[in-house]
Amino acid sequence: MPITVVGSIAYDTVRTPFGERERMLGGAAVHFALAASFFDEVHVVGPVGEDFGEAELELMRGMGIDVSAVERVSPGKTFFWEGEYGWDLNSRETLDTQLGVFEGFAPKLSEASRCSDVLFLANIQPDLQLEVRAQLPAARFTALDSMNLWIDIARDSLVKAIQSVDCVILNDAELRQLTRKPNLIAAAQELFSWGPPGPRVVVAKQGEYGAALITREGFFALPAYPLESVIDPTGAGDTFAGGFVGYLAAHPGQELSEELLRAAMAHGTALASFNVQEFGTDRVVRLNAAEITQRVTDLQQMTSFSGAPFRSRKP
Image 1 (spheres, rainbow, N blue to C red):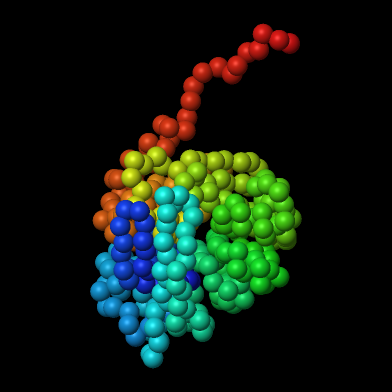
Image 2 (spheres, helix red, strand yellow):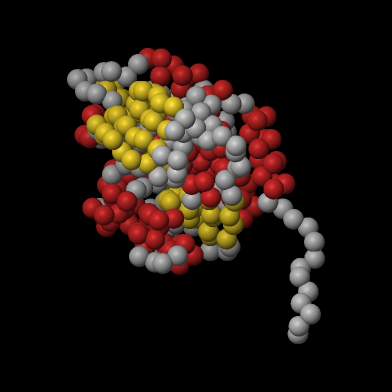
């Protein structure tokens, strides 16, 4: 099923203990689209400035991504973010943020992007998420991401946006902050109560510790894929979301069964593991399907076990 993603297209400057890269292609919509493009057709909606290069658009086109709804705003500068990671790659310091044309972003969807069966609302202002959601009333699966800023300053709008989608993808701290619940399970149950219709699936991103999936029927968790070398975690969460949502889009007509959702988790985890191995988008754009399949297979082997349950000597 075709996928539309609405979100930021950016230039990132990143420093980690392993190096530095300046003005590399980034943004939530880009990382999501590159990952999702392995599974189905992807339409990207987002603004860029007059400084955005044709080479970056061609890179996305080369991955089979439709960029016809990418709006070039002139005069104006592309959204820019600069950050630095220490040895704890789970945390980062923002050194500079320049919203540029993203500050006045008003999504303009093409006819093709409005006809998608799957919609991912990346981290943008919740009122914009609601506006876009209303333009795809027939979408079969919808998901959104958000951040602590919107929880702080636009919580009511964010709650309405969450009520309009099937799936919420946030990190575990954001889930607790949003729901004011002390743990992940309680937070997910709170979100499920925000219906009808309300979300059916909650995914908690947990950085180097993996991700957890909660539905009304059950709970599932996967560790992050073990790597000897992690270079740059920027965009890993959006890459995970692209793999997760993309896998679901590639299985049209199937119910959101536990089996399907767990397989989507594995594919999102595998794709995120490639993203962090090099700066920016460098590794994902060289990726092939066989490499993804191998890491999903590895995850299956690492997370299964055999053996009888423990039999206590006590009654």
